[in-house]
Amino acid sequence: MSQALQTYSLTAPGFQGLNTQESPLDLSLGFALVAQNAIIDQYGRIGSRKGWAKVNSSSGALGANDVTVINELVQADGTLTVVFAGNLKLFKLDSVNAVSELTYGGGGTAPTITANAWQTASLNSITYFFQSGHDPLIFDPAVSTTTYRRVSEKTGYVATVPSANIVISAFGRLWAANTTTNNATVFFSDLISGHVWSTGTAGSLNVNNVWVNGADEITGLAAHNGFLFIFGKRQILIYSGATSPSTMTLSDTVEDIGCIARDSVQTNSTDVIFLSNSGVRSLMRTIQEKSSPERDLSKNVRNDLMSAVSGEDVSNIKAIYSETNALYLLNLPSSKFVYAFDTKGIMQNGSSRATIWDSIEPTSFCSRRNGDLLLGKNGYIGKYSTYLDDASSYRMAYYTNNSDLGDVNVTSILKKIKVIIVGGSNQLVTLKWGYDFTGNYYSAQVNIPTQTTAEYGTAEYGANATTIAYYTSGVALTTVETTATSKGKIVQIGVEMDINSSQLSIQKIELQSKNGKVA
Figure 1 (cartoon, rainbow, N blue to C red):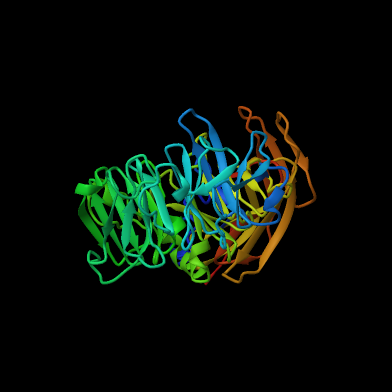
Figure 2 (figure 1 turned 60 degrees about the vertical axis):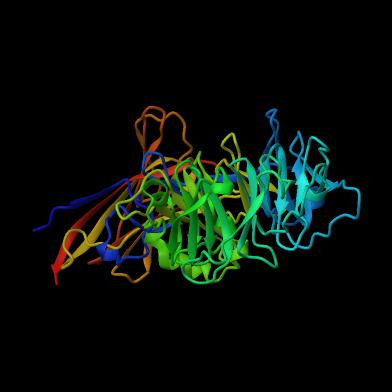
């Protein structure tokens, strides 16, 4: 007698993000083993990331070189200026978003720029550029909107500005650290005066004898809620009362966890996030509970992430926190991976939901005041927008974890696979299925038709694949389905498509199967 079909549904597939850390058979069905060029959308579904569009139409003196740092200068009168660096030069975007080179406007010989590893900070309507072994530079539009100068050439300059590799702007002053001769001192400028490094409330803090775990070097700085965070490679010092540096005190220390990449440190309204020697970490607990951090955002992908990090020059690792997109993005340029950590919620194990972008390849980031996310590119600044990478499509892929369909001892004979997709228009979808960890997949393709205001209806695309469009409050839902083949005890399903101008999310996967023989 023929067996009845059994139906298995996976609603909001992949909503827990990637998990490559645990055994696939122990995973919840909400995890993904592949989540490529994807995000978790606002409704908790796995969907396509956005692409990028050029902000500047031509490259000017930047040429075919990477944009290595981007800063948005906000002046007191509300004027916004995007300044950036690349090709051993400094630039800005003018009023029509054309690349305009900033030329040297000081009184002496122009500084020699031999590297593009600047870190920037803005204070009192001025952007400051710092990198190791170089004279710190300023873009001060109150003096000139077309030139830059050394900090030491600003009117009222006092003492010696450190030629530091690290700089942040916090609590109304600049904080700088890690020069070629001193990697254990934090220097701070006078209030609202990034050109005054003695007199007033300027000063320095030597932490050489404060490290609790032996000698270390300062690799990053952050400020939050009155605290100054001084990152070493393997430990963190936390000073309270940093709004008044002369009286700030050591509040807490974190041992065995530090920061390994200067530009990975990012702050938001509630947190400080950074790349440590054991993954992407959060200092949220330190801030909220005055206790050492235990939150590892990358717990579900830690081994893969750190394996990729091991092949990187950490000085080239960049990160950004985008409040608009609720994402912490960590770019690993050698591996060409961007790890995207969703910050909309904390998972039960304290991690964030993670996906990987493998084709966007930014060289720097900037989150603008208006919420725009800018990406450094080769010869261009891009804006995270649309659903094309410049003019090219990109591949999104989602694969479920490996699972049995109810009983690991029973062979499952797949009969039909249905996937409900939200959005998408005129995009080819590839459905894949495989068995028993072989890595060999069967596949079928179906095209999502051009979406208009959909009525109930059915359109056939080949003998094995069907699309059904539904009308639902202006949102296009399309069911793509295929007749499946073969059998196995463990099943994995994949959905791949080229994103070409249209957003797409996966609402539901439904499998129909029959039971085969019992092992």
